[in-house]
Image (cartoon, rainbow, N blue to C red; front, side, top):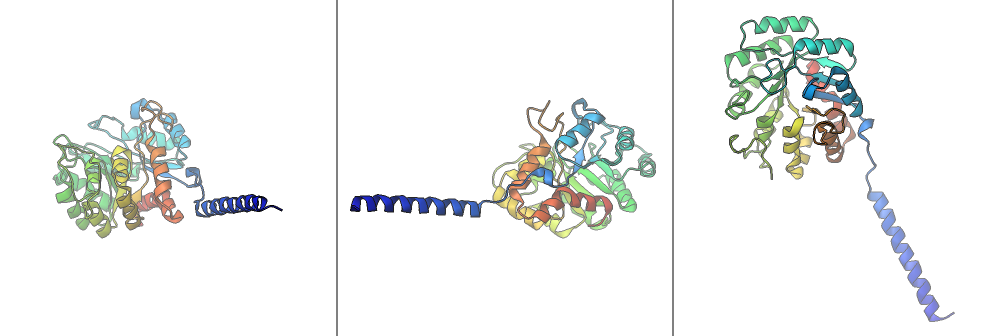
Length: 317
């Protein structure tokens, strides 16, 4: 047998061995493929009539996104662009009691607000939200509603937006005061100024409500979530996703530090769970895919998708 044949055979054997070794290492290192549908999901932030979506279409949206249950949040004043009555939410709950968890909301500037909240409690509501009026966070009427939630052992979802036309302004100065004073209520933080404080460097809200780029460690959210188990973070909408996706290296640690206080939510207005009627974007499926990629621990992922919202709802922080 010639040296040329030996050389050719040796080359083929060596090449085959190298390819096998590379393929084996690649398969060994590959992570198992995960499907969002294998996890039970509770959406902590959903409205019925976003872009005129009906009750039935909202259920179809939940089905399309693999969502078992959802907190349904009314907006009675319509100041944020969506008008949804608590009575409509209760009607939807009675049609789909195994899928929908009704919250209530009413104009807290009205004198009978506490009586209305107590009536909604008797009718089956489980919390307040979305709390969204043009008032500063330290307004006595805001505190009265938080105090009532503390008495009822309820959660309250608060929209924080610090610009001049915003809602519950003054998160940096006043939120910690409420968390210290009222320890039974679960305050669920939501929206632009809540998530801007993932960073210690927060631009003026007049400049932007959706800061991007690297996160500076030491932000208000890390401090408050670390100190107060009665604070939860609603990851929904563009505000939550922008904050979490702007600096994935930081977010990986943020998710590890607060695994029991982060709530999956969508606040999604699309019609079908695929971005219909909303420029091809579904907030729910987008966040699901992000979390599947970022959260490696199975128990933590299931907590974020479902169990943390249960704890916020039932007061088992």
